[in-house]
Length: 372
Image (cartoon, rainbow, N blue to C red):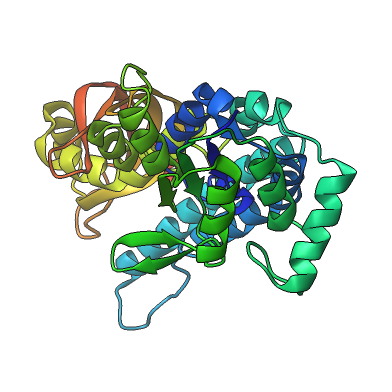
C-alpha cells in the first residue's frame, strides 16, 4: 500500500531547475518508492513532457546571456578593442554552452540523463490501470468531479481512482501537487477538496489525516519526520545552501563543462588581480612600456569540481596592454599557463587560491623583432 501520491507535473518540474539538490530530492523520493504511488499514466505524462519543459527552461536561462556587440564612437579605440575581445570571448562561451546543451537534451530524449536514470526505479513500479478504473475515470471527468479538468484528456482522474483502490483502512495520506483541483491554498495552508476528502473517508472507513504539499522535498521531509524518522535521506538546510553554490550542473552533461564555464566567467577578475598583485606577472609587465593591462585571450584546458566549493583548473592565458607610441616598443602581450583553484568566498563568489604562473612570455611583434 502506497500513501504518497505525486502529481506528474511536480515530477516534470524537477527537469526545469539547475540546482543540484534536485538529484538529492529525486533520490529521497526513490528511496521511499514502496510508499509512493506511481501510475502508468503519471509515468507516461513525465515521459511526454520532460524534454519540452527542460528545453524551454534552458532557452529561458540562455536568453539571459547578453553578448556585448556594440562599438561606440564615444569610447577610445582601446576600450572598443576590449569590448570586441569580450564579445568574442562571450561568443566562444556560448558555443560551448550550445554544444553541451544539445548533448544534454539528446541524453534526456533517451532517458540517459542523470535525473532520468535516478528516477528509473520509481517508474519501474508504475501501476497499470484496469478497465473498471478507466471507466470510473471517464465518468469522473464527464461529471466534472476533481481531480483533473473535464475539458482535457483523462489523466489525474485515472490516477486518483487507482490510488483510492489500493488504500487500506486508517491510512494517512500525502498528496504532492500544485493543481488547484486537488486542494485550495489558504494563507500558508493547503486544504484538500471536500469531495476528495469525502472519498478518502469512505475508502479508509475513518477520518484520515491528509497532508498536501506543492514541493516533493517538503512532502518527503514531512513523511520521514512523521512516519520514518530513522531514514537517512532527510533533506536539510545545508543541502539547500549547497544547491545555491553550484549552478547549472543538471543543465550540462558533465560537471567539468560547468566548471570550465565558471573559470571563463571569473578570468577577467583573475587577470585584473594578477597584473596588480602577482610578482612574476608584475615583473614581466615592468619589462615593457605598455600600460592598462587586461585579459586578451583565454583557453581553459582543464577544469573539474573537487567539491561544491572548489574548482581545480589549468588555463592558457594571454594578457595585453597599450604600448606607449612615443617610446621604443618593448612588447604589449604576455602569455602564460595558469594552474590553480577557484574557491567559494564568504560573499558567495569565486576567488583564486593556491596557484602558479608558468612559462611567462613577453611577446613582441615580428616586425619589431627584426629591427636593428
